[in-house]
Image (tube, rainbow, N blue to C red):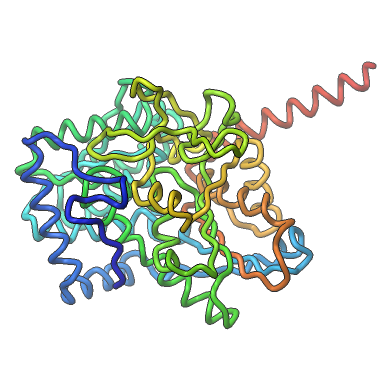
Length: 421
């Protein structure tokens, strides 16, 4: 498998590194050495590939979005959906946790901890723990427990302990902090199965490596379906595992435009968003600021004093204050392009997927669809466009019902108001 590697200190350009307490350093060093050995071991890779096939059901399909192609571009472009929602557990997260589960066998550790936002990584970790016979503890922000309770239910049924974190904004950032504290106290017996391409090295590189199966399949399937490589690939960006998986094998290919879509929430000029790499008004001034937190250096939503800002997204999985150091580096070098999608556009994208393609995407995935829809007027003749559907929308049922009811209620009130006039 192709490798994206950090330097000896864990950096990608000026981002990344290892900023942890001395207590955690032995665990980090052990994990890094074990991953390096495993990533070059044909037996490990064969075991990993077999699990993806027999347990996850990979490869996931590449679905032609025929109706969206006609609706958005008049048939000029061919739009495809890379269906990670059809992966076991309903999201791309299983790709990573199975790899880390196999690493735990080499590490000789029987307890796994994880953080989760939307709950998909938590469910995937709980499934992995059940399959391998590990004890699992999942940290989840109390706000996200309320938003994504269906996933909390499944984690508990799978035998995992779910701890609601009430610190800070009670979302993903705070869940990561709680998991890091647990790991520092129990690292001799516990593995931290970080779910996104963030944190101290080797996590950004390791998670991206395990998710690269998405990119590998996507390119093969697109070539088989069209005879060409894709011209554009869209993926939502929270921490960055989904996007790194989608972009992995195309990063050096200048003919493929890689577009990451962040959560603009209520608008990037408000305080209610999770846009780190966008800029105000296209003037080249990033919203986020370079800093160090949670064991690594990247672009965070923070003030000039280094205090982390509150974040917001309608999608719990994108509601994170930082971003993968690899994404931050590739954005700075111009290898990927970043855009944003606000809640209203995301809800419209969600509806479009249902009504035109019969696909129910997660709210996270709907950000990628919204980014693609916004660019559709610029699609040229014969473009091959791939949107990664990172997860399915079952988990968002109640949030979507509330959101869509709010919109319908507003429209109803506007109509009634016009009638009264």
